[in-house]
Image (cartoon, rainbow, N blue to C red):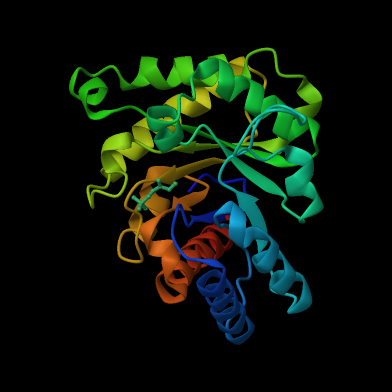
Length: 265
Ligand code: 13P
C-alpha cells in the first residue's frame, strides 16, 4: 500500500447479474457493512447499465455507504449512437465513477487510445471520477515491454488533460493476462509496475493519483498485494459478485491501512 492515500475498492460486476440479482447483492453488501462498517476504505460498485438505476435507488434509500460506477460511457453528449449511454444520463442516475478503457472494451469494442482519451475527458468534464484502466497483454509481458506499453497508455490518455481535472482521475493497473484467469501478478510484478506508474504520473503533474491493481484479486491474495505491492486498492472482478468475498477484500484494505496508520503515529 502506498503511504498517503486511503484505500479504494471497486467491484466491477461486468456483464453479470440482472437487476433483481444486482439489488440483492447491493442489499447484502449494505447489511454486512451495517454489521461491520469499513472504517478507512472507500467502496464502489460498477453494475451493468440496466442495473444502475435500481442499485442507485437502494444505495440512497438504505443509506449504504458505497458509490455507484458505470463500466463504460460514450464520449459524445447525445445523438445517433445506437446502444450507447451518455455522461449526463449516468449523472442523472447518481453515478459518481466511470471505468475508462477497460481492457475488455479495448480488445473487443474498438476502444483505441483516442477513444479512451476522449472518454476520460467527457467523464471528468461532467464532474464524475474516471478510473483509467491500463495493462499489458501476455505477449508484451513476455517480451518485457510492459513498462513502455503502460507508459504509452498513460501518456495518450492523460497528456494535456486540464490540471483542474487531475484529482478526478484514478489509475487501475490490470495486466490482461491476470484478468479472470486466476493468474495474479506476483507482488514483485505489481510493485514494479505501480512504482513505474508513480514515476510516469508526476511527469504529467499527477503524482497524487491513486493507483489500483486488478486481476484475479481475492480475499486470499488482497492483503499481500496491498502490503507489498504499493497499491491504493483494487479493481475486483469475479470476487465482487459475492458480498462475502468482496467485503473480505475491503476488510483486508481496512486492516492494512490501520496497521500502516499505527506505524506512522
Ligand atoms: P477478475 O478479478 O475477475 O480477474 O477481473 C478483474 C477485472 O477485470 C476488474 O475490472
